[in-house]
Length: 156
Image (cartoon, rainbow, N blue to C red; front, side):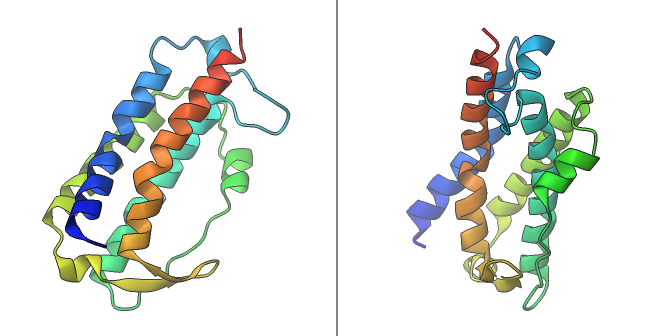
C-alpha cells in the first residue's frame, strides 16, 4: 500500500465517528428502534455493534503491531447482538466507539512502515495484516452510518 492510499484510509478511519454521530443527530427512540426489514438491525443495535466492533478492532490492531505472527480471534457479531442487550441506551456505546477510534487514530499516526507491514492470522481469513485491517475499518463506520440513516428513515 502506498503512502497516499494509507493516508487517505487513515483520514477516512478518523472521520468514522463524526459520520456516525451525524447519522444519529436528532434521532428519536422511535427512529433508533425502527427495524428497516425483518432480520435487519435497528440504528440502536448498529451503535452497540460499532462499539463492540471498534473495541475488538482496536485490540486486533495492537496485537498485530506488538506481537510477531499475532493470532487474531474471531467473534460472532450476531451472538453479541443477541446476548449483550442491544436494546439498552446508546450513549455509553457511542462514547466507547469514539474513545477506541480516537485512541487508535492516534496510534495510526505514530506507526511506521514496519508496523504497517506486520501480519498475523485470522481463523476465518487466514493471513491478516495491518494494511488489510485498515482497509476494513476505514470504511466500516461509514457503511454503518448509511445503515443508520436507512433504519431511521424506515420509521417514517
